[in-house]
Amino acid sequence: MTGKTPSERKELIPKESFSEWYDNVLLEAKIADDRYPVKGFTVYTGWGFSVAKRIIAMLEGGLEANGNEPMQFPVVIPEDSFQKEEDHIEGFSGEVFWITHAGENELERRLLLRPTSETAIYPMFKLWLRSHQDLPIKMHQTCNVYRYETKATRPLYRGREFLWNEGHTAHVSYEDSEEEVKAAAKIYQSVYDRLGLSYITLKRPDFDKFAGADYSIAFDTWNPDGKVNQIGTVHQLGYNFAKAFELTYEDANGEQAYATTTCYGMGFGRTLAATIAHHGDDHGLVLPPAVAPRQVVIIPILFKGKEEQATSYAEELYSKLTDAGIRAVLDDDPRFNPGDKYYRWEMYGVPLRLEVGPREARDRKATLVRRDTFEKTLVLESELVEKVHELFDAIFMNLRDKDQAKLESLIVDAYDMNQLRVYMESRMIVRVNWCGDPDCAFNIKDQVSGEIRGTRWDEEEKPTGGCVMCDDEGKYVAYVSRTY
Ligand SMILES: [Zn+2]
Image 1 (cartoon, helix red, strand yellow):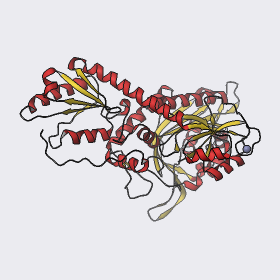
Image 2 (spheres, helix red, strand yellow; image 1 turned 30 degrees about the vertical axis):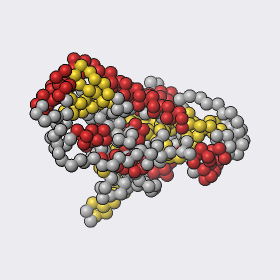
Image 3 (tube, helix red, strand yellow; image 1 turned 90 degrees about the horizontal axis):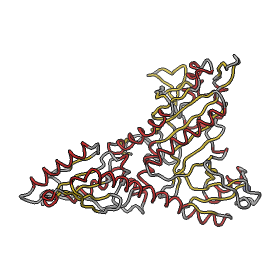
Image 4 (cartoon, rainbow, N blue to C red; image 1 turned 120 degrees about the horizontal axis):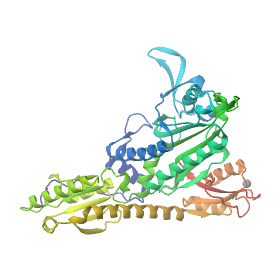
């Protein structure tokens, strides 16, 4: 074989050591680089941002089909707008970045960097809203938001700048905003489903809802380190913001009425982190074909004197795949040997590897290797495209099914505090009966360092006994876990 440069292969870190594995994959697979010299601010690098862009496109496509118009609002919010909704100020003021100066001069009116955009958007909605015929107003934007997080930061999971998409809508009635909450939840679920991610859809307890919301729905997913990862939220804001921002309209009878509003957000860092953490293995990333920047890597296996044969056949296969709309890459870099190339593209999580040697060239065949199972299939050149699509489906279904099984294996029931403590220590997601009293939730957090994350939103679960904490009548089935 040709290619005599020293191996660039490094020792693999087992996924069991999740924290180390994760940091290594972020750098080796060029997902993100956390060495930017401001704490909590991360650089998305080429491969990672290419995956993120595909997730963004999935979500934006769903939102625009739902009638949300794409918009871009300014990153700065004036102090007086921010302070209109009381709960909202209380919830966010501790983590706001302020802009106080322009050059040497103090600004007359302080500005803040949006921690979320309700207070930027609603004053404009007010200008756009005159009559019931103007409703609904539905928009979305993909942007960065800024929160001075005091908890430990971690790239993609928790940063002080994060990339997300936020949707904001205004409606004529509470019923309409209820429908919007359901529609938004469906769009979010369809994105997670296409990434093969398992999650639970919870209604957050009142003490943990979005600041200024009537109620909040959240999508929680498991993480290998035993903390759940919130990958999206949908909020029914009811009349709260509409009243604070005087979002009124003239109804069909000529009377002034308040609109209702909803908002929702999906963090792309966390969704990307979940995709990496769920599907990855000891060799690095394993990407669902739908979001892999390159779906097939073609690696010619070169034998001395027969290089030409394999190389030109590999080029032929590359064109064939590319013409069929498959994102392929031909790695014929002579500086590296095939083993080094396998290592690199496995780290990148490319779903299929196509090996082409002189024998394959002679027989007009190709060997396909699955990234998720390393299973090899020898296929005829004439059936290549069809077979690649079949394997993409098989890979996706395998990832999705394994992911779902993993989530199910993590959910257990506890009926007393001892059981709950044991399960928390073994990093499970625990279902308990709860009386609904926030004090019991706080005591649980104190005693087992797990939080009540909420109750199922998508299905009704009936309590089967007394509250796990106080033994009073159980009114809810709540989920308890450690969290980011
Ligand atoms: Zn209780």
